[in-house]
Image 1 (cartoon, rainbow, N blue to C red):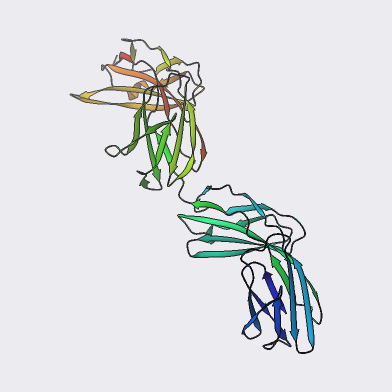
Image 2: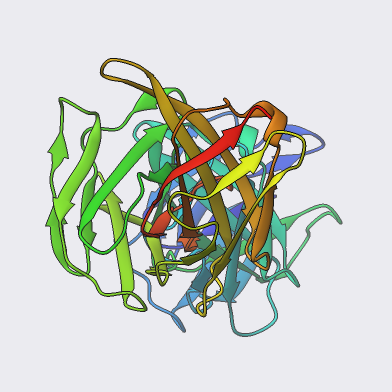
Length: 369
């Protein structure tokens, strides 16, 4: 005899003898008569709800044999992870965790995504089950719930492999989403103008909802960025929230760096091409990194130059003198950058790129002799 997961809703009980289905048994569950479906399988409809503590009484009469079973509906588990509206990438496994009371036979972890319904089995001592990424749909919301199973007690002429269990009501359903993480790149954010580019894989994201310090940041289709004017003084914080499809993807925060002060060279200084051009600066806010730049004219309405990434601990950098044009006015500058701290569903290379910019040093020359 096999009676698995009795509880609320339609139940199926299979009665067999010597491996063959018994078709003329009388089967009742809580005094409700079950109808024979096929090959010894009996179906009975129980109430739509059987709360924790409800008793389930099974009675089977087959010829001269009488079998009785009793069980108590266990309490519904409570899901503790993942959190509602959590976001997972396509390659991430999803860990489902729950609490449950009493001695239990096992759990069913059930996922639903549209018509795609899947059930995973966990042991009675388990309170955690990891669903492999390949067993979940991509780019979809997924509802997960957990059902507890408790063993019943059988009395009568039953075989050793007979089973009788009852199920709890479903745990609190939690919906999570599997989607591509967003890459967020600030475009020289700073004390006044704020620009942010958002992509998902190779695609520019145009339908995200961005707020910066609580102010909406609209999408500018001409430039493919989210842009706004927002004044924040040096040392002030920028807080960027990114949502999409009604879900908060995460938050990025960072401080506006102090504008570095170039201390050498000075306007109009000259140097020979045989030695590097040393740029020094001061900065008290210790940004994540600096960018040292040099530019010069390459003709009418034309400018070119070089930029160099420098560690945030540095306060000096040598520009290679032999790589710079001679007898040409050079413009030098130093920018401080903070990358920001990202919490949420973002790619590891996301950066706020918050800039503090120095006043440029003008008219520096490399002489040829």
